[in-house]
Amino acid sequence: MFALSLSTFRERWQLFIGAIVTVLLGVALVQSSLLVLLAATSHAEAIVLVAMTLGIAAFLAIFIVSSTFAFTIAQRRRDLALLRLVGGSRGQLRRLLLSEAFLLGLIGTALGVPTGLVTMRVQSWLLTDLGFVPSPFPVAWHDWILAVSAGIGIGVSQLGVLAASRRGSRVRPLEALRDNGNAARVMTGARWFFGLLFLGGAIALAIVSQSVNVDGAIPTAINVSLCGAVALSALSPLVVPLVGRLFGGVFGRTTLGGLAHANLRDGVRRSASTAAPLLVLVALVLGMAGALSTLSAAGHRELAEDVRGDLVVNAPVTQPVPGVASASTEYLLPVTVTTGSGEDEDHDNSDALAVNEADYQQAHRIAPVSGSLADLHGMTVAAAGASLGDTMRLSVGGQDLRPRVVAVLPDSVNGAPSLLLPREIVPPAALGPARTIVRVQPGADPAAVAAALPQPVSTVDEWVAASATEQDSTNSGIMTVLMGLAGLYALIAVINAVVIAAAERKAEFAAARVTGLRRRQVVWMALLESWVVVAVGLLLGAVAAAGTVAGIASAVGLVSVPWGMVGVVTAGSFLVVGVTSVWTSLSATRPAPVTLIGARE
Image 1 (cartoon, rainbow, N blue to C red):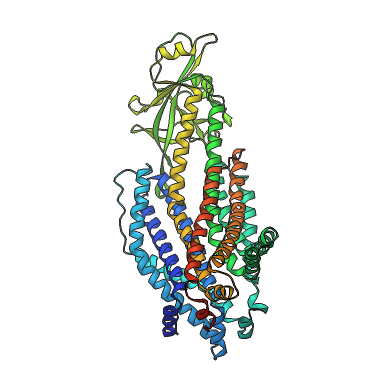
Image 2 (cartoon, rainbow, N blue to C red):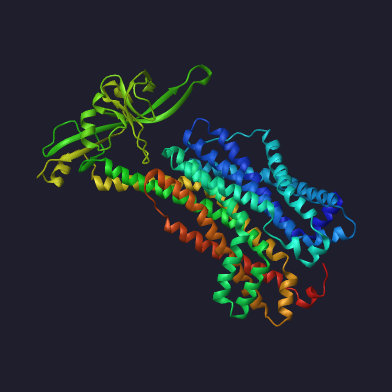
């Protein structure tokens, strides 16, 4: 069977090259993310980002590789039927397909390991350039990663082809050759099962994300997109005919539109398989962009509602200034929080503000969840996520402090420090950058007051806008780290699916040409079909992404749609798939149609 697999690979290399590329990129992305994660153990933000990237990369590798293999086997149904007709058993067909998957996984792993080294450098550069880790940021190589990469490449290939090989081996030869009956049935029992299972999981996660705090809502809501993408990908054959019928109602009266509509109606499996990677790409990109945009808008609103003042000074105000009603100077300082004991002891780096409680309450509106900031004197602390009356273990400026929690702060979405300390217990050397929120006396001239204050001075509105811009920049960095390489992987999978779909349509295109269509018309017909498939992928991907945005929105109380990203993804999808469709259609229609019509596969 292995020799037959090699022969099949040489003959049908167009189908297998795409599978090799998907395995290669999956191995490279997972290997790189794992090595970078091990190197970032002392950087909390980088750990969270790379861990999420690793999870997304693993999901994409499993989903795209399995869907690619399933599509490839579906495209070879006639080959499998011929093998059955000449005496091949179901077991032999399954061994053939598993042998092919092993060969492709082996090649993909061999190419993916060195590609992973390049990917690792790109990820390290991204984390360094965006400020999540210091420069230089060395990433060590571990020999055992070779076994992990082999397990990913070969293991995912074998698992990806397992279900498809079982389905392919059960095809009845005559039904497959006539392309009717069970062989033409697209919505199989497995599709219904996994589609409904993951749809239920997406709905459950969306409900759970509404009852957890902001920190828990973010990962929960992102998983809504992943489950929703799998569910809608499995159920997409139900949507393709509906969109095709709508397309037929609009363009069906024209010759090319009618042919494209008929091809969509008869090629539901092909259209659904082509839309699957695009669906995942749209769900992840728009879901992530919508979540970050919503969080950014919520942070902007929270900051604007919290600060009660007129001017912000990027320096301490220690002397009385005419026209100033109140001034709250707040010092930012790094703090190490210790939890647990013995082997379970953990140290987390955090940010805190050293404040004067009376001045702070004059400058801020948001009140504690429990306790009172009026008690913030002596060895005390106000903290988010703590319990009133607990004693915390802090390290500030090299000194160990044991303050008692006198106020519990609400969870913040604007990146505000989660600890407030009385300024008198903080060592002077530990005080970091200072800002002062100033309230101007009624009737005083704000411009004159600003001129008398230490410079630079900005209005509260200007400061809030600058903070929002900084948060948007941080969110863009997070988006780049999470979806940069993973999005590129999914985009390549989209192109690969279009190429595989067109590779087996040479005879179909030739038949259209001998009936009177010109080559240009055939290419235009294929382009119309591909754009309908893009519409299906965008529609279902947007539905999956909406689950993520809804989960975040329920936690923060507002929705912000990133219309710019929506436009880029929509236009880019139509452009990339359209260009790929035209290129593959031109390649498929290059031979004379008579030579393809007369050939028998």
